[in-house]
Image (tube, rainbow, N blue to C red; front, side):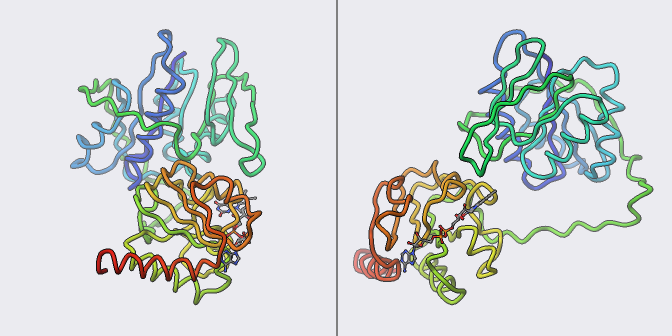
Length: 322
Ligand SMILES: Cc1cc2nc3c(=O)[nH]c(=O)nc-3n(C[C@H](O)[C@H](O)[C@H](O)COP(=O)(O)OP(=O)(O)OC[C@H]3O[C@@H](n4cnc5c(N)ncnc54)[C@H](O)[C@@H]3O)c2cc1C
């Protein structure tokens, strides 16, 4: 099996992409007859060496572009890969990676699957698994037409160390001329405002729909600031506009792995829980003793979240003035 990972070095989440690719390769592509390399797209010359160090495979193909724009990336890939015997292309998780996987498969007359967790290759077909039905079921899919173009699932099973040995630059392409595009007349990159880095937080306080309104969401955010925690929310809270969408935790938000995660007023639905399940210690506060979160947390407090958190702040103040 010959595979190629594709990384978007123009994006600010390149380290996350590289980590996910590294974990996927370690978990799925370790047999002796597997050969892999990475195609790294980048635009800033000054960042070239730092980006190469993030690459999880030993062989790297470098492609310099003006900006990461899907149509141009597809054009670059189909040009560079013409005549190559690549069986599998691995794109980053998220919407951009999924879009590229599907569009490349169409152009190369292969097959695609997005948000893939695991694969197994038999020589004639690729068996790929992904979660379906809001994360309740692990679905298995058979891909028969090569090349297989897949995007990875968000988050990863293990945090494997990235191979820091010297990388072998197989080829360097300059595709900066590809920026001309008949469909796009002008473009401007507006960096997304990141409320906080929930993925890497150690201490997280999450508020669920039990907060009931914007004022109580702001109250909980203040509690988080007071106790030194990052603040996250469940989907209904983000969707109601009570806080920024970037605070959402779960399959369609941040996947966290905090040392301590306090969940106040969230029921613990599967799509939410997937975003906190890698936390080391989970405390649930919920008025309903039958809420699913109580069964999946290390400590469950059946009470009103305000009463419990006010008491927590009091105890922390007595213990160490904050
Ligand atoms: C494709 C898909 C993707 C999804 N992705 C996500 C996702 O990424 N993240 C996510 O969160 N959801 C996601 N969801 C939605 C998810 O299925 C649940 O609907 C959602 O997580 C419920 O949020 P909640 O627990 O905050 O609200 P609710 O289910 O309304 O629960 C509120 C909880 O608060 C408790 N409560 C009420 N008042 C108090 C109080 N005063 N003190 C303490 N407890 C109180 C209640 O007992 C209840 O358990 C997704 C759904 C789908 C279909």
